[in-house]
Image 1: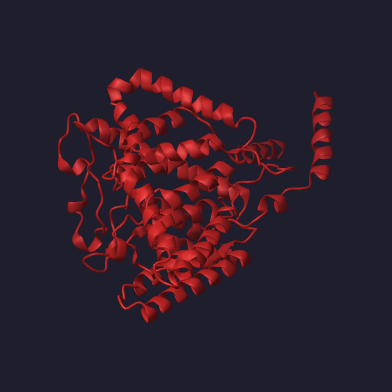
Image 2: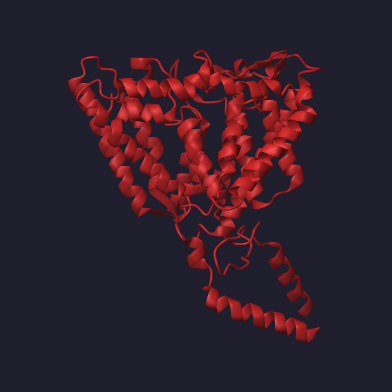
Length: 450
């Protein structure tokens, strides 16, 4: 019996979270596997598959639009937590969501009533309301524990590691395999289940082709996924081989999205060590370029800094042009400053890239932008995640593409932050005053036994 108890104690110790709790008074917790509803596990794994393997798939509704699997995954998680009674209404999130519905609805109604061009889209409005509704709920504190979040992050990093390896193999396979499907197998997917949209999937760097992770639609998306995974690994485990694999995958993507995410992440948490972290990253990057610059053609990546000055570059289209359109058109009519030009009008009226920060201002005005921005910020700040992870989630949603109606970006935010209840670590952990005497006494007992 004594041996069995010792064995049980050993298994309990092995099941502790990946990193110690950041809140005072943290303590080890038992494995979450026995307490997590199976439906929730299935929904989480389907979400990971949707973000990676199924990225180019979609349920085709028309010639120009198909539903992305990430949308099904988003509501699969909602269904899993609601049907198992693991969810609760998040008061702040629900209240802000009502504000989003109100201002988005007013934008639509005003523009179809006052604008003779009739470009507002009811479908775009409906998609906005559907995509942001999950931010009104979260897990119950008894379910959404720190240990469960650690379990989810462990599997997220494993999935991203698999994607990184696929991208690295894809990049080097192009030297011996010249089949078109190596970088774009979209045409092999039957039309009824093929994703919609136009993407720069086969993107050349001189004689080479940028890695898109094989499964993903663009190299920039692959770069962002792996950069965020690297930030997660740095924040949680710091395994050198895993981080080196992620770093190489970012390099062969030749995209600035991941580098921008890493640069922002290194600024947080703000403090005395911020400058040290930034200088360390710059130094490490400089050494890497000196050693591997010629072999990996890294001068191309460094040269992309100048793209902001070129009106024909993706950097100008994504970061500069939308801002100019907003400045010129925000007050073109009496109501557009506050309520915008209406849902779905960014491309129809102005033909600019639908980068999130510009699209939300153009279509929903200042009031709608405040409501949507507040919903995202409130959702991100519910999380147990380190500050650098939360900041990068906001940067990706806001700047790195047209993510206002992108289920993939919102699924990231739900999984990492919005799903988790506020303050669960403080509620579950004993107060510091009560925990300290027990730890001290336990150590003296062990010393006495020895």
